[in-house]
Image (cartoon, rainbow, N blue to C red; front, side, top):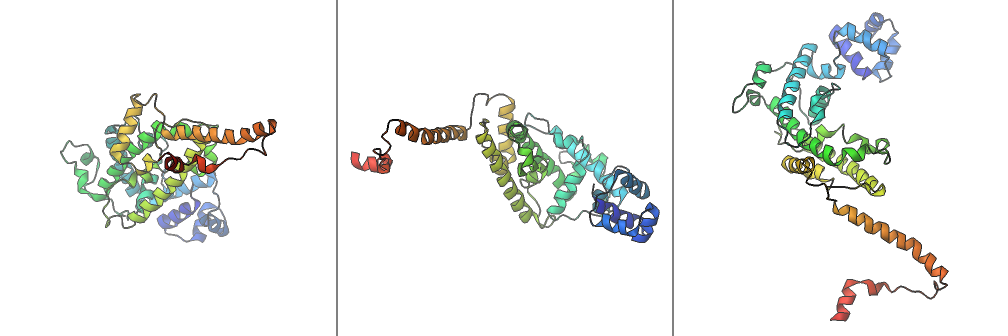
Length: 321
């Protein structure tokens, strides 16, 4: 938990200084400074902060972004409803677990993704945007009148597609203990899926002025992480049934179709071409290691010379012509 956020939120809500806050908590002002600089905060002290600020189980970072406990609760209810709507519209054949939010992380990940895009979270929750507008059966849901709520819904809909592809083709590789990917940067792939999903959404540049920079950085990160997964899969001889980079570059519709095909068993006997290339590379490496030993055994290694030009397709074509 972010200790700095606890301190900043307490100072904001209680309208006090660090010395006064220290007295309320029964610690020294120096300790407040340490927490503000990021020092670990114990569960006991977290409980005291929560009691003083009356934030319940809310994340202090989320409350700071939303402006108040009341606004934070309203945003939390809103995203729960938007997530439910988006989840019900999934067409991948897979259940989008991040939108179920069993670990209560969706509010924080959504707010952080939006702020990374340059979105300013309004300190006052938009009037009229409430649960009744989420569940109405209009041709165009009323939450579409609110650009920020509409953007969040589009991000969640995109997440359906991204997560479906992830569940179909990548999750089993990430969780393969033999590959030890959780000790590599690839461990970020699943936690950051909402950011990747957001890169596939049409965004108003006025609402999210940093979107282009955000999109470039998110895609660059995933390119690196997916290459790590592919290399680990090749080395571990774990079959691939799709080009994993499709999750980075593919549109939501393309990812939907790929995930649905896997969920229906269409790809049951299919292997991605990279697997065959890997088999060729393994064979070539084996020959490279074994051939010198054979030549030495036959005592002809000094007599054997390989004319590489004879292996060239172009040179053979010239001779044949």
